[in-house]
Image (cartoon, rainbow, N blue to C red; front, side, top):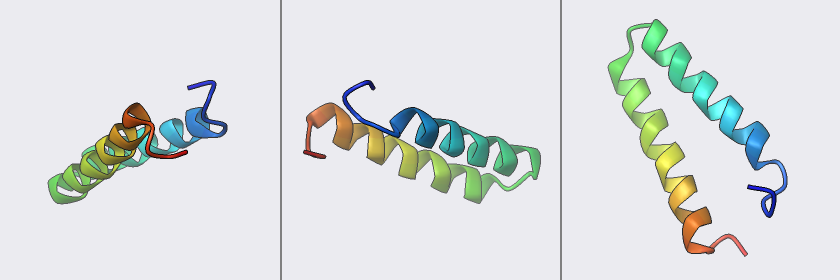
Length: 50
């Protein structure tokens, strides 16, 4: 993550959004947040963000 400035903060935000959706009982929103987060991580892992 060091190679991706701001990513740690973004991860914290994304995990917070997921927790909010779960706590709110919104399964559809939680699923959407997870898909969005995993998509971003996939891009980072593949190095497609550079």
